[in-house]
Image 1 (cartoon, rainbow, N blue to C red):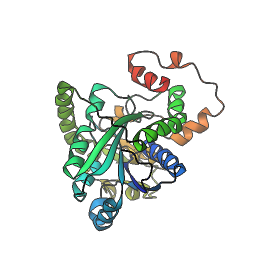
Image 2 (cartoon, helix red, strand yellow):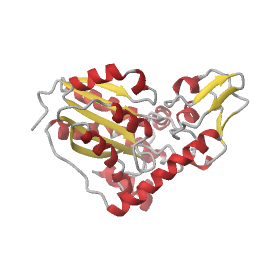
Image 3 (tube, rainbow, N blue to C red):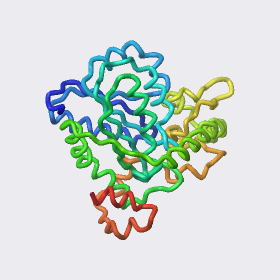
Image 4 (tube, rainbow, N blue to C red):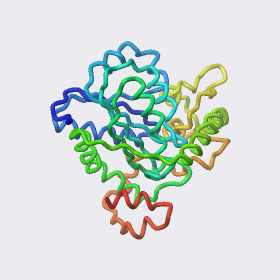
Length: 300
């Protein structure tokens, strides 16, 4: 089986702060070089209900689905889960699932794709390929610049390799540890409760210009503007889009603030900052167990 003659490929993705979107854009460029018809399809929290008819038409016409998402508490983010539920039942359409993390393919991160793959298979998709890609971390522990820029620069080569695998019909499925699945399931459950508290704990600073960027770009429609100004609901998924994307840096997390990177998260600024900077050897900047999987990924 191969996809050299395939005509329509759907790249469906959820990207909170832009890392996954960068990956999808790289894949799109690679697939277009191979003269495939490619549609990039951003998954947002409100998309499924407002565009279900068009969504069904698109999905039923494709030859291959590639689903991308950043790992959220060792699982797919809620918008992805909701989107899969709204998909029509199809007749054995081929699919691949690519998860994205800052730490690589650990035992727990492997679990992140399992639920989505099962859900897609119940809808009639034949998931034959899955893998993990790494982007700079956007929470808790920042990826050092000398590692982060390498992750950005290696995207074209990684996309080329994975694209070749998928288009040639290579089968790649991951076995997961039962203990890791159990622990990841518990963490995912706890995260669903914690997101509400985190979202309700967001506050607007005096520097806010009321540009309403956050209201317009929240993927869950969780931010509103009214008589009380900008307010936050209970549908937050801790994607950090509002915090890092706010033009005036006016959104502050009063709960679990340790998760937010003080320097923010902006791949474009990273590239500007590291332009013409001589990089430290990988052995120097990626020392220790924490960066073991990332170092292996970059060395491959």
